[in-house]
Structures are given as C-alpha cells and as structure tokens.
Image 1 (cartoon, rainbow, N blue to C red):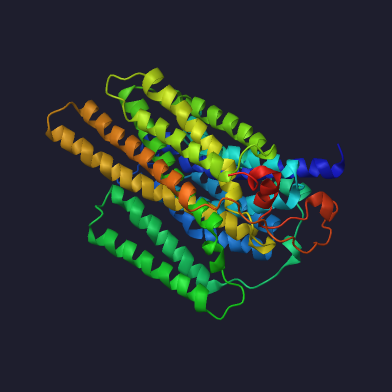
Image 2: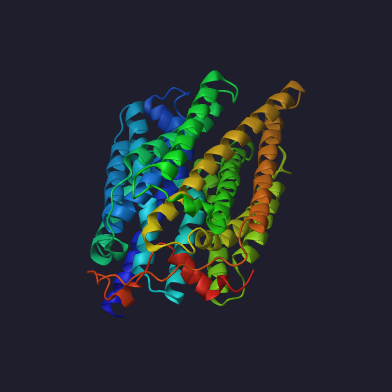
Length: 511
C-alpha cells in the first residue's frame, strides 16, 4: 500500500470516528439518565435537558460550523471541534453538580456542530474520485445511520457495567484518535485555497433562529404547544429565520452564510426535507422503543441497549449493499429513496401493533429489521443527493444543512409524537385501562405517526427530487497539499464531491 493510499485510509477512519461520536452522543445518555439523575441530584424536571441541550446547541450552531469549515480550512475546524468535544466530555464525566453536566453537554453540542460538517468535507478532500470515494461515502453513511442505535446499546452497557460517567468519558479515546489521524493524514487549508469573510450577522440570525426553533419544540415535553412561552419562542424563531433569509438575499456581504440559490436546487431541498422527515420518525421510534423495552418488557439498561443491535446491523448491511448498487449503476437516487421510505414506514407501523403482553420477537425484532433495512437503504443516496451539483466552496455548508435538517427534524418529530402519545395515554387511563396498556397505546400511536413521517418522505422523493441531478462543474485544480499527495491523489475535490462522484458512478443515469 502506498503512503498516499495509507493516508487516505487513515483520513477515512478519522472522519468515521468523528461522525460516530457526534451521532452516538445524541442517544448514549438516554438509558443512563436515571443513574445520572440520582448521582448528581437532578430535579426530575431538569433531567431531560441533559438530552435536549445537546440537540439545541448542535442544531443551532451547525450552519456556522459548516461555513467556518469552508472559510478557515476543513482540517483546522475539524480539530477545533474535536478538542472542544473532548474537553466537554471530560468535564461531563467529572461533573459534581447538575449544571456541570448541562454545561458540558452544551459545549459538546457546539463541538459536534463544528465536527459534523467539516468531517464530510474532509472525506471529499481526501478520497479519490470514483469507486474509492463511493465506498468511503458508504462508510460515512453507515456510522451516521447506526450511531443513534449504537448510542442506546453503548449507553446501556456502560451504565450497567462501568457506571454512568463512562457514557461521557468513552468519547476521550475516540477524540484522541481523530486528532492524531487528522494531523497525520488530512491536508491543511481549504478547497482551492479559497478564503473569505465570515457573515457574522447571518451567523447570529441563523444560529439564534434554529436554536430557538429547537428550544421551542423540545420544551413541549414540559409546556403545552399553546403555552405563552412556547408560542413566543417559536414566533421569535420564525422572525429570526425570516430576517436571516432577507439578510442573505439583500445584504451587502460578498460571502453569505448560505447562498440562497443552494436551497432553490431541487436535489438539495428534497434531500433536506427527506432527511428531516426520516430523522423525525427515527429518533421518536428509538425513544418509544426504549420505553417499551424497559417499562413493558422489563429489560435492564444493557439488555435494552442490546435489543437495538439487530436494527443497527441490518442498517449497516443495507448501506453496504446500497453502496454497491450505486457503484454498479443498478439504481438511482429516487429509485432507492422511494422503497427505503416505504420499508422503514412499514417497520415503524408494525411496532404500533404492540400491546402490553407483547414479546421481543414479534413486537420488536421483526419491525426493527424492517426499520433498519429502510433507514440503511436511504442514507447513502440521501447524502449524495444533498450535495450533487454544488461548487467546491460549499462543501461544509451543504453538509451543515443536511445535519441541521436532521437535528430540526429529530426535535420536531420527538416533540410532536411525545405530545400525541402522552395525550393518548391520558385518554386511555381516563377510560379505565391498565397503566401499562395505556402507556403501550401511547407508544403505538407514536410508532404509527412515525411511519406517517416516512410516507411523507416518500412523497418528497417522488415530487421534489429531480430525476437526474446535474453534476457540478469541474473546479479549478488546487495546489498540491501536504499529506494528500498530488491533487490527483487527493481527489481534487470540492463540495459536491461525494454526490457528483456517486452520480457519475451510477445515480444520474437511472431514476
């Protein structure tokens, strides 16, 4: 193996680990919350904020993180984010008071918002065009798809056998590996050595708008949708986001945070809508399934975590098969995303048929296999669709958009479905059914509505995504950079690199 090939392999490992950490920490603390709450003396009303604050800061700072990667260099920004994430993980693992943990999770969210978009941009910078980059995109999609389920598994095992503090400390060796691998194998600088100025006002408006939108939605777990606090928060989010759009369209800056023409592309708009709906259903299903396993089937944290393993493994296999299908020109983006959504919807809806006397085999395992298959099929073409046809300097921005859609979709889906499930449970209790059956009836409604989100995603694939996304124009050749060989070795890539490359490898010609 040549030195440049070894560097590219190490860079891919760094990207995969970074993405795995970011996704893992969306769910790794979930099953540890009871022990964490007891250990730190959390008020029950505060405990959900260990989860919510991460989503809030992750989603709120994503667009800023993506633009920073485009302007200041993908490796530099990836390292900034990784160090921040690691320090916050250490602080959380050593926390002595509830506010210590909440503050650590907030900083973790900011670090994740910087890591996620720069990681995908680094992948396109270091992997050669053609089959190599398509395979790398499959690896990236695999860790993105299964990280949430793996978080439940890892969190359960660590909580039961090592203690709740290790759900935070587990990030430290992974972060160290990312830093060492990135320093050795990832070139410094930006695509085409492009420089520019950060759109500060745009960053403030976007970060505030997305942050308030997520805040308003996650607080519906404790406040109603019609409460003054919720209404004011969501209204403020809308005002800031509208102001952001107007500023980006009419402002005097030469380097906007987001080029609005990006959102006008059908493949970008469609991919982000699909991702938001997929995330809305997926995270809610993880939430309700965790409750069903522990409350109804009486599984411990480790057993509940292990119950997610079939879903994760199925998704990983589906991703690898999908990558080969794309590489061999057997199907296109739309051709895969339509059945993917229908299969996942069927799995989610099947879970909705569970009852209080259900079993793991019939009510969890089989629908989990379907859900994992559908989610796994979707991720590679979805990631490709979000970036095809984009110029090199928008690599981080496009990735940030997709991750922001995932975060906003997750928050919206969980807020809406938890509200619906709680209302259903309360009505069933009032009707005199047993507490366990009332809870299951609420979970079942959540599962079915999650399937409905995936049906909407299929409609997006049918009516919004173009049949043949246009590939990006070839960017000007970049100067050779240390650690990546010649531009040919490094892939001479740009923002749309995964997707133009995948499109050239089989997505564009078909459906």
